[in-house]
Image: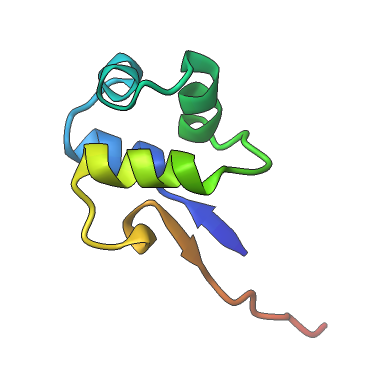
Length: 73
């Protein structure tokens, strides 16, 4: 499962959607969809801009893969 942590990192850094738009030049809809966890896909260029704007040390600060655990009944 892919976990989108954009809203979490923005909250820690006390950034608003408008702050990210200003820093990245991304469209409001793009940032809002990612922030609210509704995005179905994301460009590498978008990830690059977000990482630079948020001063990430690694991509996993924004997006993380977690193995799903199967539950047996």
